[in-house]
Length: 249
Length: 167
Image (spheres, each protein chain N blue to C red):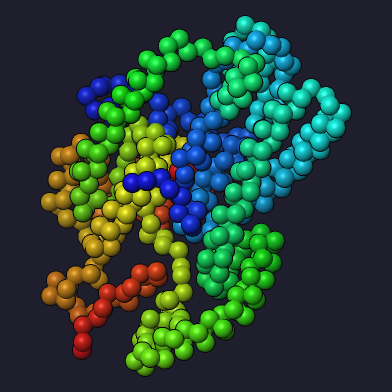
């Protein structure tokens, strides 16, 4: 969809025009925060970035405290504090989103080495403790579910972890929806990208070409241009996010 | 299409997007002196009276609120009304674009859309595309349209599996 259809130059501010790709730690932090917010699964913990930012904010906090005690230049100190608060918000929010995901997908994360390794040491400790508490509650929960509902269902459906005894896995245990659609963009031209292996329907391809709205059919490779916003299934572009070639918004 | 943050924290509130936008640089006219500001987010200033300076929006607002600076906007009411008009026109275009979404769209590109606009259409667009994708999946087709009588066991967690016919 082109907001400037009717004009030739396609100029004007947008989410991606003139976008400065992260170089400073604050920019990297903003990007990490946005990615974590938009991604359905937990991403790799930014160990070095968070360590650097935490050190920096601790230092600034000390400076602010000192200046406040000495009553030096209150306006300047107040503005410094605002800057500090803005950075702290990003860090806290980043950590909080991750904790929510850890709690939500607790079982799955602990069963997968790949996911487990995306957590920081502290997050792993949290997950273990959280699970221990959860398991204690879960036993009570299981009894409660059994007594109130499950025991009254037909035999096939009595498990609280599986939909029915024919399920091959614990499909009542929540897992992130990797087929969620996300909005993403790339800094540079990534070229032809294969979305999906589904059958291509020729009629749909012709139809989609006639529309101004840029739709990409299944099975059709798309060109990932620089600084364009795409709506794609997370699963398709997951490797590009992990490698840092694309960002989520 | 509201931009409410869901409990999973996976969508952005309007406030969060504003927060990001507050780092954009704007021009102010200070009425006081200030040495170079060495912030975590960058260096700004020094500020001198009546000399325009480039600062982040959040800083500009803070200074203006304290009476330390003014903005350089000649006619605020005109600007506001223009922005409203632009917003309406753009929204209409977005809506028109959305209407063209068909069941065969497996990816879309959105040119020249702003972050706030993306956030507003995000719930609708993402769900629509996901639904199309799910409805299009081979295992949703009745047996007669599939070659073999194979039932694919794709686990779709968080979603009920399609009911299998009695054998």
